[in-house]
Image 1 (cartoon, rainbow, N blue to C red):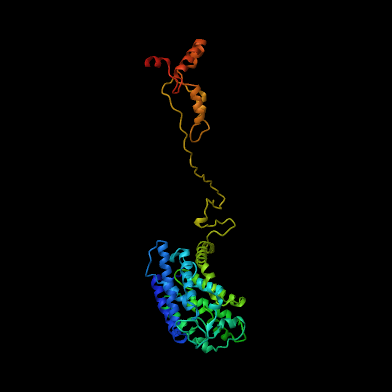
Image 2 (cartoon, rainbow, N blue to C red):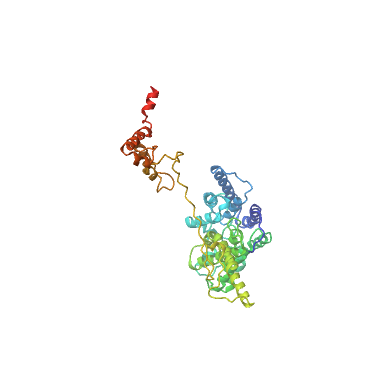
Length: 450
């Protein structure tokens, strides 16, 4: 199983956050300093929300958990620069509350937290999330934006029309769009740097981009060439930004190399299917949430395949090789070597079936009736019957009745036959004297008490 050397997640998140913050430079220059305020507010909201939840859940707040500020910054960079401060705060609270603490903190994260908040804003507030200031218009740091709003390249592609922006302007980021996801050239450089630093997984990024590019080249959505279709598809929406920074996070990305390749292919394919058959912008966000839920399944599929290859395919090849070199030929009754976990007392297929007795747990022995030392003392038959048909304990109810009507007496059966009525009367006297019970006291004992 192929695996890349793993790095500490906190250090990985720190490096990714530092590299991603470089996208704020062209945003502040081309869109205004409001981009810096939106990013700072989003990061601060996520950190405060995380601290409050740690206090409520009585967890230790880790100031070195760089995943939280990373998610806050990534969420801000996917928003328009003119978004209101209230929506930024709401998105930050949802990002940490639902994305992190709802699933049990960092060790149990299933979905990408920034993608959850971005999907919520796209569904509930499309007019605030999908309309952007036109290129060249800067937004003031404070106050509302009163300029003209435009739509993104992804919106034009959904209408099956050729975007009005040229390919050069698209690659340089001179188009309307979110704060940072429009700067395609800078995102590519950042992705390459993270791949060399092993802060990002190249298998996921490369597989996703190649899958999306291949589908875009084969099925253009507008009247342009295959090359133009690839450039426009990869430059629109959040596909490059999300693939570089969100798709291969340490917390929810697959662990094995084949699993990462399958994950990247599924992400690219699902994104393009949403674009081909859907009309919603931000398709990559929804595709990312779907593939996040399947992340562990990819690793499990790889492990099952390797186990099958080792157990079944290798066994068949060994048997085939042995048969070719002169070993006994394969027949219909050839013994099949099953894996250990499937061996449930399976007999060999050689005509000699050996029966194996399963060991049964013996029940606890029932308590024996009290043994009497005197040989002449007999036990009434009904007294013995109280201990029959009992696995664990005697029939105490029957035993209590017997002890009230019968007794243990000193007699011999032969004496009864010889003495006749006198012997029987003698036995009756002995019964009265030996009758068990608290209230039965013999006359001799009464005399002694007096």
